[in-house]
Image 1: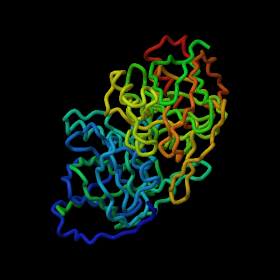
Image 2: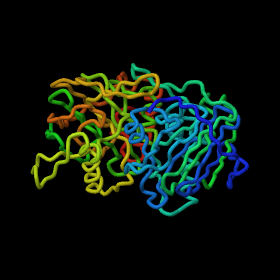
Image 3: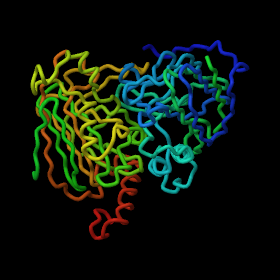
Image 4: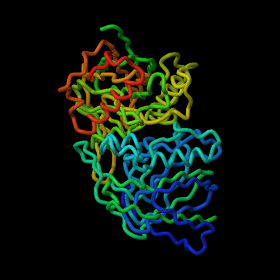
Length: 216
Length: 244
Protein backbone atom coordinates (compact mmCIF):
# COMPACT_ATOMS: atom_id res chain seq x y z
CA UNK A 1 0.00 0.00 0.00
CA UNK A 2 1.51 3.29 -0.98
CA UNK A 3 0.53 6.46 0.80
CA UNK A 4 -0.92 9.76 -0.32
CA UNK A 5 -3.13 8.36 -3.03
CA UNK A 6 -5.06 11.47 -3.99
CA UNK A 7 -8.10 10.23 -5.83
CA UNK A 8 -11.26 12.05 -6.72
CA UNK A 9 -14.66 10.40 -6.94
CA UNK A 10 -16.95 10.44 -9.96
CA UNK A 11 -20.02 10.47 -7.74
CA UNK A 12 -22.19 13.56 -7.94
CA UNK A 13 -23.51 14.91 -4.60
CA UNK A 14 -26.83 15.63 -6.31
CA UNK A 15 -27.41 11.91 -6.91
CA UNK A 16 -26.78 10.97 -3.27
CA UNK A 17 -29.91 9.71 -1.52
CA UNK A 18 -28.62 10.92 1.84
CA UNK A 19 -27.12 14.36 2.38
CA UNK A 20 -26.63 15.76 5.86
CA UNK A 21 -24.52 18.50 7.35
CA UNK A 22 -23.30 17.55 10.83
CA UNK A 23 -22.31 20.48 13.04
CA UNK A 24 -19.20 20.30 15.20
CA UNK A 25 -19.72 18.45 18.45
CA UNK A 26 -22.59 16.35 17.22
CA UNK A 27 -22.72 12.55 17.03
CA UNK A 28 -24.10 10.42 14.22
CA UNK A 29 -24.77 6.70 14.04
CA UNK A 30 -25.96 5.21 10.81
CA UNK A 31 -26.12 1.87 9.02
CA UNK A 32 -24.51 1.48 5.60
CA UNK A 33 -25.71 -1.38 3.43
CA UNK A 34 -23.15 -3.49 1.60
CA UNK A 35 -22.22 -1.73 -1.64
CA UNK A 36 -23.29 1.74 -0.54
CA UNK A 37 -20.79 4.56 -0.92
CA UNK A 38 -20.27 6.99 1.94
CA UNK A 39 -18.47 10.32 1.70
CA UNK A 40 -17.34 12.59 4.53
CA UNK A 41 -16.62 16.15 3.39
CA UNK A 42 -14.40 18.45 5.45
CA UNK A 43 -16.43 21.58 4.71
CA UNK A 44 -14.09 24.19 6.18
CA UNK A 45 -10.80 22.29 6.39
CA UNK A 46 -8.72 20.71 9.18
CA UNK A 47 -11.71 19.33 11.04
CA UNK A 48 -11.35 15.85 12.58
CA UNK A 49 -14.14 13.36 12.00
CA UNK A 50 -13.69 10.77 14.75
CA UNK A 51 -15.13 7.61 13.24
CA UNK A 52 -15.83 4.07 14.43
CA UNK A 53 -17.18 1.16 12.41
CA UNK A 54 -19.07 -1.97 13.41
CA UNK A 55 -20.27 -5.04 11.57
CA UNK A 56 -24.02 -4.25 11.65
CA UNK A 57 -25.00 -7.91 11.89
CA UNK A 58 -22.50 -8.54 14.66
CA UNK A 59 -21.93 -5.26 16.53
CA UNK A 60 -19.49 -7.01 18.86
CA UNK A 61 -17.02 -6.94 15.96
CA UNK A 62 -15.60 -3.40 15.96
CA UNK A 63 -13.12 -1.63 13.72
CA UNK A 64 -9.55 -2.52 14.63
CA UNK A 65 -6.91 0.13 14.09
CA UNK A 66 -4.09 -2.28 14.94
CA UNK A 67 -5.28 -5.04 12.58
CA UNK A 68 -5.93 -2.57 9.80
CA UNK A 69 -2.50 -0.98 9.92
CA UNK A 70 -0.69 -4.27 10.55
CA UNK A 71 -2.36 -5.93 7.55
CA UNK A 72 -1.59 -3.02 5.23
CA UNK A 73 1.85 -2.44 6.84
CA UNK A 74 1.17 1.28 6.93
CA UNK A 75 0.16 3.63 9.73
CA UNK A 76 -1.99 5.92 7.62
CA UNK A 77 -5.17 5.52 5.64
CA UNK A 78 -5.72 6.66 2.07
CA UNK A 79 -7.29 5.47 -1.17
CA UNK A 80 -7.12 1.68 -1.34
CA UNK A 81 -6.98 1.14 2.41
CA UNK A 82 -9.22 -1.67 3.61
CA UNK A 83 -10.62 -0.91 7.05
CA UNK A 84 -10.98 -4.15 8.96
CA UNK A 85 -12.83 -5.39 12.00
CA UNK A 86 -11.09 -7.07 14.91
CA UNK A 87 -12.06 -10.44 13.41
CA UNK A 88 -10.31 -9.52 10.16
CA UNK A 89 -13.56 -8.97 8.32
CA UNK A 90 -13.34 -6.14 5.75
CA UNK A 91 -15.80 -3.37 6.69
CA UNK A 92 -15.20 -0.53 4.25
CA UNK A 93 -12.67 0.22 1.52
CA UNK A 94 -11.49 3.77 0.90
CA UNK A 95 -12.19 4.47 -2.77
CA UNK A 96 -11.48 8.19 -2.97
CA UNK A 97 -9.44 10.59 -0.88
CA UNK A 98 -8.48 14.17 -1.64
CA UNK A 99 -6.46 14.58 1.57
CA UNK A 100 -3.94 11.74 1.29
CA UNK A 101 -3.48 10.79 4.92
CA UNK A 102 -5.77 10.05 7.84
CA UNK A 103 -4.80 9.29 11.43
CA UNK A 104 -5.18 5.81 12.91
CA UNK A 105 -3.41 6.24 16.27
CA UNK A 106 -4.68 9.39 17.96
CA UNK A 107 -8.06 8.10 19.06
CA UNK A 108 -10.85 10.25 20.44
CA UNK A 109 -10.66 12.83 23.20
CA UNK A 110 -12.54 12.10 26.40
CA UNK A 111 -13.29 14.00 29.56
CA UNK A 112 -10.69 11.86 31.33
CA UNK A 113 -7.98 12.06 28.67
CA UNK A 114 -8.45 15.82 28.49
CA UNK A 115 -7.57 16.07 32.18
CA UNK A 116 -4.38 14.16 31.40
CA UNK A 117 -3.42 16.03 28.26
CA UNK A 118 -4.39 19.56 29.21
CA UNK A 119 -5.52 20.22 32.80
CA UNK A 120 -7.73 18.67 35.48
CA UNK A 121 -10.10 21.61 35.05
CA UNK A 122 -10.89 20.58 31.47
CA UNK A 123 -12.93 17.56 32.61
CA UNK A 124 -16.19 19.39 32.06
CA UNK A 125 -15.47 20.28 28.45
CA UNK A 126 -17.30 18.73 25.54
CA UNK A 127 -15.46 15.72 24.10
CA UNK A 128 -15.75 12.96 21.52
CA UNK A 129 -16.07 9.90 23.71
CA UNK A 130 -19.02 11.43 25.57
CA UNK A 131 -20.60 12.00 22.16
CA UNK A 132 -19.86 8.40 21.16
CA UNK A 133 -21.40 7.08 24.38
CA UNK A 134 -24.51 9.23 24.01
CA UNK A 135 -25.04 7.83 20.50
CA UNK A 136 -24.51 4.27 21.79
CA UNK A 137 -27.00 4.92 24.59
CA UNK A 138 -29.61 6.23 22.14
CA UNK A 139 -29.07 3.28 19.85
CA UNK A 140 -29.43 0.67 22.58
CA UNK A 141 -29.08 -2.85 21.18
CA UNK A 142 -26.51 -3.76 23.79
CA UNK A 143 -23.78 -1.34 22.71
CA UNK A 144 -21.60 -0.30 25.64
CA UNK A 145 -18.41 1.55 26.46
CA UNK A 146 -16.42 -1.64 25.88
CA UNK A 147 -17.34 -1.31 22.19
CA UNK A 148 -15.38 1.94 21.90
CA UNK A 149 -12.23 0.70 20.22
CA UNK A 150 -9.52 3.08 18.95
CA UNK A 151 -11.12 5.09 16.16
CA UNK A 152 -10.11 6.70 12.90
CA UNK A 153 -9.56 10.45 12.78
CA UNK A 154 -10.42 11.38 9.23
CA UNK A 155 -8.63 14.58 8.10
CA UNK A 156 -6.19 14.57 11.02
CA UNK A 157 -2.44 14.56 10.54
CA UNK A 158 -0.56 12.65 13.25
CA UNK A 159 2.93 11.94 11.96
CA UNK A 160 5.34 9.55 13.66
CA UNK A 161 9.11 9.79 13.43
CA UNK A 162 11.70 7.07 12.93
CA UNK A 163 12.85 7.82 16.50
CA UNK A 164 9.45 6.84 17.84
CA UNK A 165 7.98 10.33 18.27
CA UNK A 166 4.36 11.17 17.60
CA UNK A 167 2.90 14.61 17.15
CA UNK A 168 -0.28 16.38 16.18
CA UNK A 169 0.86 18.38 13.20
CA UNK A 170 -0.91 21.03 11.22
CA UNK A 171 -3.63 19.51 9.14
CA UNK A 172 -3.13 18.72 5.50
CA UNK A 173 -6.83 18.80 4.78
CA UNK A 174 -8.56 21.81 3.21
CA UNK A 175 -12.07 23.17 2.69
CA UNK A 176 -14.05 20.75 0.55
CA UNK A 177 -11.59 17.88 0.93
CA UNK A 178 -13.24 14.51 1.34
CA UNK A 179 -12.81 10.82 1.89
CA UNK A 180 -15.12 8.27 0.31
CA UNK A 181 -15.60 4.62 1.17
CA UNK A 182 -17.66 1.69 -0.04
CA UNK A 183 -19.17 -0.75 2.44
CA UNK A 184 -17.79 -4.28 1.98
CA UNK A 185 -20.47 -5.59 4.31
CA UNK A 186 -23.38 -4.06 6.22
CA UNK A 187 -21.47 -1.56 8.37
CA UNK A 188 -22.62 0.72 11.17
CA UNK A 189 -20.80 4.05 11.27
CA UNK A 190 -20.41 6.04 14.49
CA UNK A 191 -19.08 9.59 14.17
CA UNK A 192 -18.26 12.28 16.67
CA UNK A 193 -17.50 15.44 14.73
CA UNK A 194 -14.68 16.59 16.99
CA UNK A 195 -15.87 19.41 19.17
CA UNK A 196 -13.15 20.02 21.66
CA UNK A 197 -11.41 23.35 22.00
CA UNK A 198 -8.11 22.22 23.49
CA UNK A 199 -6.45 20.91 20.37
CA UNK A 200 -5.13 23.43 17.85
CA UNK A 201 -5.68 20.97 15.00
CA UNK A 202 -8.73 22.82 13.76
CA UNK A 203 -7.55 26.28 14.74
CA UNK A 204 -9.75 26.22 17.87
CA UNK A 205 -12.69 26.54 15.52
CA UNK A 206 -14.54 23.21 15.12
CA UNK A 207 -16.55 23.19 11.92
CA UNK A 208 -19.30 21.09 10.29
CA UNK A 209 -18.83 18.09 8.05
CA UNK A 210 -21.12 16.88 5.27
CA UNK A 211 -22.20 13.25 5.03
CA UNK A 212 -23.36 11.78 1.72
CA UNK A 213 -24.53 8.25 0.86
CA UNK A 214 -25.07 6.72 -2.57
CA UNK A 215 -26.68 3.37 -3.28
CA UNK A 216 -24.04 2.39 -5.84
CA UNK B 1 10.54 -12.44 44.08
CA UNK B 2 7.23 -13.92 45.07
CA UNK B 3 6.07 -15.59 41.88
CA UNK B 4 7.68 -16.83 38.68
CA UNK B 5 6.31 -18.40 35.54
CA UNK B 6 7.83 -19.32 32.20
CA UNK B 7 5.86 -18.94 29.00
CA UNK B 8 7.03 -21.38 26.36
CA UNK B 9 6.86 -20.38 22.69
CA UNK B 10 3.19 -20.18 21.83
CA UNK B 11 2.26 -20.06 25.49
CA UNK B 12 -0.36 -17.89 27.14
CA UNK B 13 -1.22 -16.75 30.64
CA UNK B 14 -3.70 -14.45 32.29
CA UNK B 15 -4.26 -13.42 35.87
CA UNK B 16 -4.68 -10.64 38.37
CA UNK B 17 -1.62 -8.84 39.70
CA UNK B 18 -1.99 -6.60 42.69
CA UNK B 19 -1.26 -2.88 42.71
CA UNK B 20 2.26 -2.10 43.85
CA UNK B 21 3.89 -5.07 42.14
CA UNK B 22 6.83 -5.28 39.80
CA UNK B 23 6.37 -7.49 36.75
CA UNK B 24 9.70 -8.40 35.17
CA UNK B 25 9.48 -9.87 31.68
CA UNK B 26 12.67 -11.45 30.33
CA UNK B 27 13.25 -12.90 26.87
CA UNK B 28 15.71 -15.66 26.12
CA UNK B 29 16.61 -14.35 22.72
CA UNK B 30 16.17 -12.35 19.55
CA UNK B 31 12.81 -12.63 17.87
CA UNK B 32 10.97 -13.23 21.13
CA UNK B 33 7.70 -11.32 21.37
CA UNK B 34 5.21 -11.10 24.18
CA UNK B 35 1.87 -9.53 23.33
CA UNK B 36 -0.21 -8.39 26.28
CA UNK B 37 -3.55 -6.76 27.07
CA UNK B 38 -4.46 -4.96 30.29
CA UNK B 39 -7.75 -4.46 32.12
CA UNK B 40 -8.57 -3.14 35.57
CA UNK B 41 -8.83 -6.31 37.66
CA UNK B 42 -12.34 -5.78 38.99
CA UNK B 43 -13.79 -2.94 36.90
CA UNK B 44 -13.11 -4.41 33.52
CA UNK B 45 -14.85 -1.57 31.69
CA UNK B 46 -11.58 0.24 32.34
CA UNK B 47 -8.85 -0.99 30.07
CA UNK B 48 -5.57 -0.10 28.43
CA UNK B 49 -5.96 2.63 25.84
CA UNK B 50 -3.37 2.64 23.09
CA UNK B 51 -4.38 6.08 21.74
CA UNK B 52 -4.51 7.75 25.16
CA UNK B 53 -1.13 6.27 26.08
CA UNK B 54 0.57 7.38 22.88
CA UNK B 55 -0.84 10.85 22.49
CA UNK B 56 -0.39 11.87 26.12
CA UNK B 57 3.31 11.02 25.90
CA UNK B 58 3.81 12.04 22.26
CA UNK B 59 5.31 8.68 21.49
CA UNK B 60 4.83 5.78 19.13
CA UNK B 61 7.09 3.47 21.14
CA UNK B 62 7.22 2.42 24.79
CA UNK B 63 10.30 2.38 27.00
CA UNK B 64 11.53 3.28 30.49
CA UNK B 65 9.75 6.37 31.81
CA UNK B 66 6.58 5.71 29.83
CA UNK B 67 3.36 4.61 31.45
CA UNK B 68 0.42 2.62 30.15
CA UNK B 69 -2.77 4.62 30.52
CA UNK B 70 -6.35 3.46 30.80
CA UNK B 71 -9.30 4.81 28.86
CA UNK B 72 -10.34 6.57 32.05
CA UNK B 73 -7.31 8.84 32.21
CA UNK B 74 -5.44 6.83 34.81
CA UNK B 75 -2.07 5.08 34.98
CA UNK B 76 -2.34 1.28 34.86
CA UNK B 77 1.35 0.43 34.84
CA UNK B 78 4.70 2.22 34.65
CA UNK B 79 7.75 1.04 32.75
CA UNK B 80 10.42 1.37 35.44
CA UNK B 81 13.22 -0.64 33.79
CA UNK B 82 13.98 -1.53 30.19
CA UNK B 83 17.11 -2.91 28.54
CA UNK B 84 15.61 -2.83 25.04
CA UNK B 85 14.58 0.80 24.45
CA UNK B 86 11.66 0.22 22.13
CA UNK B 87 8.56 -1.89 22.55
CA UNK B 88 5.85 -1.80 19.91
CA UNK B 89 2.41 -0.53 20.98
CA UNK B 90 1.04 -0.14 17.46
CA UNK B 91 0.92 -3.53 15.76
CA UNK B 92 -1.69 -6.17 16.45
CA UNK B 93 -1.36 -9.77 17.66
CA UNK B 94 -0.76 -12.52 15.11
CA UNK B 95 -3.91 -14.20 13.79
CA UNK B 96 -4.59 -17.85 12.98
CA UNK B 97 -4.65 -17.03 9.28
CA UNK B 98 -1.31 -15.21 9.41
CA UNK B 99 0.23 -18.00 11.50
CA UNK B 100 -0.80 -20.69 9.00
CA UNK B 101 0.28 -18.61 6.02
CA UNK B 102 3.70 -17.76 7.41
CA UNK B 103 4.70 -20.92 9.21
CA UNK B 104 2.59 -23.54 7.50
CA UNK B 105 -0.53 -25.20 8.77
CA UNK B 106 -0.09 -27.27 11.89
CA UNK B 107 -2.50 -29.23 14.02
CA UNK B 108 -2.54 -31.00 17.34
CA UNK B 109 -3.50 -34.21 15.47
CA UNK B 110 -0.29 -34.10 13.48
CA UNK B 111 2.15 -32.14 15.62
CA UNK B 112 0.88 -32.70 19.18
CA UNK B 113 1.80 -29.80 21.45
CA UNK B 114 4.35 -28.51 18.95
CA UNK B 115 1.58 -27.07 16.80
CA UNK B 116 1.78 -23.31 16.26
CA UNK B 117 -0.44 -21.21 18.47
CA UNK B 118 -1.73 -17.80 17.37
CA UNK B 119 -2.17 -14.67 19.46
CA UNK B 120 -5.73 -14.35 18.22
CA UNK B 121 -6.74 -17.70 19.69
CA UNK B 122 -4.63 -17.34 22.83
CA UNK B 123 -6.29 -14.03 23.67
CA UNK B 124 -9.75 -15.35 22.76
CA UNK B 125 -9.29 -18.22 25.21
CA UNK B 126 -7.96 -16.04 28.03
CA UNK B 127 -10.62 -13.35 27.52
CA UNK B 128 -13.38 -15.92 27.79
CA UNK B 129 -11.68 -17.56 30.75
CA UNK B 130 -11.63 -14.20 32.55
CA UNK B 131 -15.31 -13.55 31.95
CA UNK B 132 -14.76 -11.22 29.02
CA UNK B 133 -15.80 -11.67 25.39
CA UNK B 134 -14.43 -11.42 21.88
CA UNK B 135 -15.79 -7.86 21.73
CA UNK B 136 -13.15 -6.99 24.35
CA UNK B 137 -10.36 -7.89 21.93
CA UNK B 138 -8.30 -4.80 21.28
CA UNK B 139 -4.84 -3.28 21.08
CA UNK B 140 -1.86 -5.09 22.54
CA UNK B 141 1.65 -4.10 23.53
CA UNK B 142 4.22 -6.19 21.69
CA UNK B 143 7.10 -6.37 24.15
CA UNK B 144 10.65 -6.94 22.79
CA UNK B 145 9.63 -5.93 19.24
CA UNK B 146 10.34 -2.80 17.23
CA UNK B 147 8.68 -1.61 14.07
CA UNK B 148 10.48 0.96 11.95
CA UNK B 149 8.39 3.70 10.37
CA UNK B 150 9.06 5.64 7.24
CA UNK B 151 7.68 9.15 6.76
CA UNK B 152 5.12 7.61 4.40
CA UNK B 153 3.82 5.60 7.34
CA UNK B 154 5.22 2.34 5.93
CA UNK B 155 6.04 -0.15 8.68
CA UNK B 156 8.84 -2.73 8.72
CA UNK B 157 9.77 -5.16 11.47
CA UNK B 158 13.19 -4.49 12.99
CA UNK B 159 15.03 -7.81 13.11
CA UNK B 160 17.45 -8.85 15.88
CA UNK B 161 16.04 -6.09 18.06
CA UNK B 162 16.25 -7.79 21.44
CA UNK B 163 18.86 -10.22 22.73
CA UNK B 164 19.06 -12.96 25.31
CA UNK B 165 18.48 -11.65 28.81
CA UNK B 166 16.76 -8.44 27.74
CA UNK B 167 14.02 -7.42 30.13
CA UNK B 168 11.39 -4.85 30.91
CA UNK B 169 9.91 -4.17 34.34
CA UNK B 170 6.34 -2.91 34.76
CA UNK B 171 5.16 -1.46 38.04
CA UNK B 172 1.44 -1.92 38.58
CA UNK B 173 -0.36 1.27 39.63
CA UNK B 174 -3.74 -0.46 40.09
CA UNK B 175 -4.93 -4.04 40.48
CA UNK B 176 -4.51 -5.37 36.96
CA UNK B 177 -5.79 -8.21 34.86
CA UNK B 178 -2.90 -9.11 32.57
CA UNK B 179 -3.40 -11.32 29.50
CA UNK B 180 -0.26 -12.55 27.73
CA UNK B 181 0.52 -14.44 24.57
CA UNK B 182 4.06 -15.54 23.69
CA UNK B 183 3.41 -15.58 19.97
CA UNK B 184 5.32 -14.11 17.01
CA UNK B 185 5.01 -10.46 16.11
CA UNK B 186 2.70 -10.32 13.07
CA UNK B 187 5.27 -8.42 11.00
CA UNK B 188 8.25 -10.66 11.87
CA UNK B 189 9.44 -11.82 8.44
CA UNK B 190 11.12 -14.98 9.77
CA UNK B 191 9.64 -18.15 8.30
CA UNK B 192 10.59 -20.11 11.38
CA UNK B 193 8.14 -20.06 14.28
CA UNK B 194 10.13 -18.47 17.12
CA UNK B 195 11.09 -20.77 19.97
CA UNK B 196 11.96 -18.12 22.55
CA UNK B 197 10.55 -18.44 26.01
CA UNK B 198 9.60 -15.52 28.23
CA UNK B 199 10.02 -15.42 32.00
CA UNK B 200 7.44 -13.57 34.09
CA UNK B 201 8.55 -12.67 37.60
CA UNK B 202 6.41 -10.75 40.07
CA UNK B 203 7.75 -9.05 43.20
CA UNK B 204 6.68 -6.24 45.50
CA UNK B 205 7.41 -2.70 44.32
CA UNK B 206 8.85 -0.04 46.61
CA UNK B 207 6.49 2.90 47.19
CA UNK B 208 6.32 5.46 44.41
CA UNK B 209 8.70 8.26 45.32
CA UNK B 210 8.01 11.89 44.59
CA UNK B 211 10.97 12.01 42.21
CA UNK B 212 9.77 8.92 40.36
CA UNK B 213 10.91 8.89 36.76
CA UNK B 214 7.57 7.78 35.33
CA UNK B 215 5.55 10.28 37.36
CA UNK B 216 7.82 13.11 36.28
CA UNK B 217 8.32 11.99 32.68
CA UNK B 218 5.94 14.74 31.53
CA UNK B 219 3.11 16.84 32.93
CA UNK B 220 0.62 14.50 31.30
CA UNK B 221 1.96 11.52 33.26
CA UNK B 222 1.79 13.48 36.49
CA UNK B 223 -1.86 14.35 35.94
CA UNK B 224 -2.68 10.74 35.04
CA UNK B 225 -1.02 9.59 38.30
CA UNK B 226 -2.99 12.25 40.19
CA UNK B 227 -6.18 10.88 38.64
CA UNK B 228 -5.19 7.39 39.78
CA UNK B 229 -4.43 8.50 43.33
CA UNK B 230 -7.60 10.60 43.59
CA UNK B 231 -9.70 7.66 42.47
CA UNK B 232 -8.13 5.47 45.14
CA UNK B 233 -9.47 7.78 47.84
CA UNK B 234 -12.88 6.31 47.11
CA UNK B 235 -11.85 2.72 47.68
CA UNK B 236 -8.90 2.77 50.07
CA UNK B 237 -8.06 4.09 53.45
CA UNK B 238 -6.07 7.24 52.95
CA UNK B 239 -3.16 6.06 55.12
CA UNK B 240 -2.55 3.33 52.55
CA UNK B 241 -2.01 5.84 49.78
CA UNK B 242 1.42 6.01 48.30
CA UNK B 243 1.57 9.77 47.91
CA UNK B 244 -0.32 12.12 50.17
